[in-house]
Image (cartoon, rainbow, N blue to C red):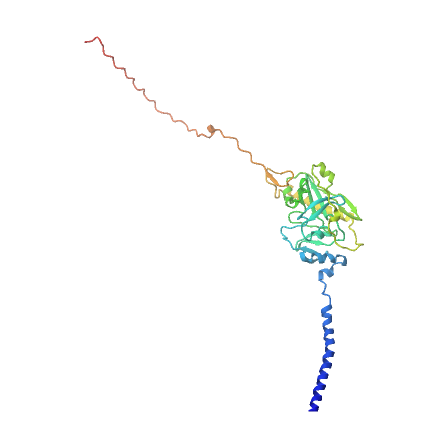
Amino acid sequence: MFRRSLVFALLFSCGALLSSCAVPNAADSLGPSVYEPPPMPSAKLGLPPAYRVFHDELVEYGDWTLIEPYGWCFRPDVNFVAWRPYQQGWWEPSDTYGWIWNSSEPFGWITYHYGAWFYDRFQGWVWQPGPVWGPAWVAWAQVDDYIGWAALAPATMADVGDVPGGTFQYVSAQQLASSNVSTQALYVTRLAGTRGTLRAIENLDRVHGAAFNRGPDFLMLQRMGVPVPQHVDAENFRRAALPDGLALPDEADLIDASRRLVDVAARELDRLRTDGVAPPPVGNTLQPGTGTPRIKPAPKPPAADPDSLRVKRPRTPRDPVAPKPRKRPAAEPDSTAR
């Protein structure tokens, strides 16, 4: 009996010792899996460290896709058939930066003020990150009394290619400062009736060393009778926390990228005028200040002469009819006769 109690005591002591030794080992084995940071997504890892803040801000609004040789680019979750950048929003004037694009899209505060957009025939519209804030990275152009803008492609992209609907969006100058400029924007097919030369608007300026295009000059618009609303404070626009020392866009690259787009747009407009592709309806004009077509009523035909509409039949000759003999009046009775 004593031996059995001693054996049980020894076994209990050994079990307690083994369990006390096993607990630290289990904790050590679970430690790395619990405290290891999650792996970084490939897109974020592939971006330069200065641009990884863009990945975190934009990941819930679309996908990041690798497009060589431009690297990781952001593709928003939108309708690719009808959507294009710088479409959902409006233009606001600023003393410091000229015309600033104010977007109504949740990703717009980044993608329209940093980097560049380009159209990829497989991925649609994609955005490449850039290093500096700007009012809008677009090319500006003018034809007759229409103002157009188009998203600037990366400076290293020599061939911008064809864009569905045309490279630029256009509005009547009267509508540039409208809050519903998105609904007034026209594609190039609506401008086939214009006669002027499409020319680039290069109103360049610099702020903190960064070159940008201010867009249409305020004084020029006022001379055209375009009311320019009260200017906004550019500092109220949200900005990303980027490190200092990033390479700033060069003025020459900005001009080259803008002129490439204007050259493509000029060829698009010339094809419409020469080949007659999608001409505007005959008799249509653009209603001043709206940018929407106003159809002239067709002229009424002249009133027809009723006699000219009456069918004239030739008369057939009739046989001559002998005149009826006239009856002599009856003689009155003589009153003297008896």
